Image (cartoon, rainbow over all chains, first blue to last red; front, side, top):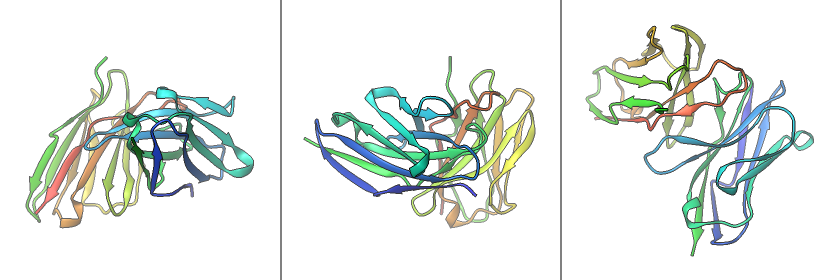
Length: 113
Length: 113
């Protein structure tokens, strides 16, 4: 069975600092990996996805993630945090191309001014 | 083009009642998935419908059911509501291709009292 582990339920960074949100997955088949962001009382918005090909994936709002098969990781980074990045972030894995997602527990990102 | 629309946004029901939630996917999308989000259990997959057929099912009791219509709109029904059914219910639509992402609606906040 597939699973996702997000290290750190809460991450706090200063505005302008590096954002690093960690995600490790378990999958018996080559995975499709996703990062979603959720603002309060809203649905989920896709930040980026990895399916095949280039292991460094660039997404919206300056976020990127690197697929490392040997480490079964898909960590999310952003060079410089902005106040508007404060939200909850979810890593997800699917072997059906997005139609059935298994989510991590989420990481709440706080950005300090 | 219009996004995923869920109605209603908020709902309050009494224990023992039943409830029906509605989801209209993005035009052209035939796959609709449902997720339950709670603080304790996080995001959990309920089921997926594709072309009016249930294609995937999560690990929820039979009180949770769904259906999809010929226009791809989907409904989710929960019977004999329990307090623990209080959650944000999210609907996601996907295209037919296997590596496509899921687009989420804003959700229906169900409160059972």
